[in-house]
Length: 398
Image 1 (cartoon, rainbow, N blue to C red):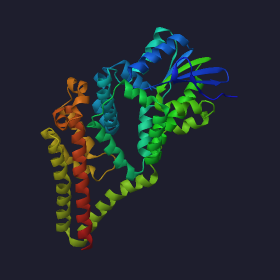
Image 2 (spheres, rainbow, N blue to C red; image 1 turned 90 degrees about the vertical axis):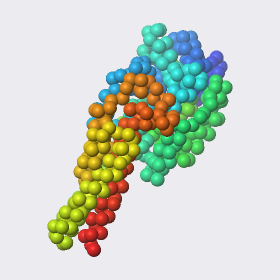
Image 3 (cartoon, rainbow, N blue to C red; image 1 turned 60 degrees about the vertical axis):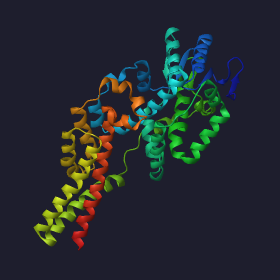
C-alpha cells in the first residue's frame, strides 16, 4: 500500500517524500527562475545520493539548456517546410518571457533543472528526462482549445511580450507555496479546462509514470512547483495504460479535411459555372479579379512587414494559387523566400528576448520580421479569398 506524500522535515515544504512499494521518491518543487531552487536541488542530490535523478525536461529542452548556442544549428528552412513556424513562435515567446524574468533574479531559465543534470553527471548518477516532448504538449494544448478560446489564448501570449513583471526571490518563494499554485491552477482550469489538461494534467501523469518506472530504490525528481501536487498524488497509482493516448497528436479529422478542400473546389466550380452561364468575358473578369484580390492584399501584407522585394512578388504570385489549396499557405511560401534572401543574423538570435518585447524590434530583427511576413501575407490572402469567393458566387447567381 502506498503512503500519502508528506513534506520533508529536513528540506522543508518544497520537497515532498512519497513512499511506494520498493521505492522512496523525493520530489523537489522549484521555481524555474530561482537561485534558491538551484541551491536546494544541488543540496538534495548531494546529500541523498539517489539511484537516479529525474528532471522535468524532454530531450529537445534538455539539449537547448546544455547547448545554449543550439540556435546555431536551427534550420529555419526545414522548419518552414514542415510548417512548424507557429511552434517556433510559441517557443520563442515563452523563452523570451522567462529570459526577461531571469535577468531580474540573476538565475537563467531552467537553471535548477540544469543543476540537477550537472549534479547527476558529477556524481555518476543516471539522469532520466521525464517530461513529455514539448512539441506534443503544445500541439495537444492548441488542438484541445476551443476555437472561441484560441483568440484569448493567443492574446494572452502576445500580451506577455510587453508585460513588465517584477520578480525577486521573495516573490518566487511565494509562488512556490502550494496554496498560491493551487489557486492559479484552478483559475486556468476554469478558463481553459482543455488547455490545462494538456499543459498540466497530462504532463503530471506522464512524469509520474516516468518517475515510477525509474530504476532504483531511491529517486530524486526535480520539477516546477506547479506540478508537485499532481505528480505526488498520481505516483500512488498505475496509469501506464494511459501513456499511449497522451503521447500522440490526433490527426486532423476527416470532416475538417473535407471542409478544407470543399471551399476551394466550390470556388473553382463556381468560377467555371459562371463562365458557362454568362460567357467567357465574365469568366475572364472573375479570374482576373481573383488574382488581383488575392495577390494585392498579400503583397501589401508582405510590404507592411518590410519584406524583401522578391518576397513581395512571391506573395502576389503565390496567393491566388495557394488560396485554392489547403496543402500550403502563401505565408509559408513568403517565409521561405524571405529566409533564403534575408537569413537572420547571429546576434538576432542572441537578443531576440529584447527585440520581441518592443514594437520596433519586430521590424528591426530579421528573425522576428520573418513571423511578420508570414502573418501579414497570410492575413492578406485570407481577406482576398473571402472577397474573391463572394464576387464569384454573386456573379454566378446574379
